[in-house]
Length: 94
Image (cartoon, rainbow, N blue to C red; front, top):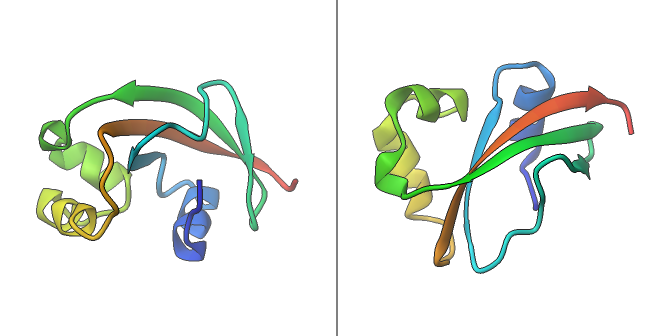
């Protein structure tokens, strides 16, 4: 799973703890870790859901101003039949 540097910094700072992804097949598993440029991330939980079920609070936890900003971002993502809500946390230097 590729994450932009700005998002990684927000996760490291504790400002973001959710990531949303739309894909053909998952590339991370709950309970796993992800090595990134800023350090190691914990993949705490993964939930299948529909994009229209994303709440304002979840959009903000993912770093978006609101649901409208989230949907605008989602429209730029490549298609996929699986949409997931991924809870993450920063573990430290890798």
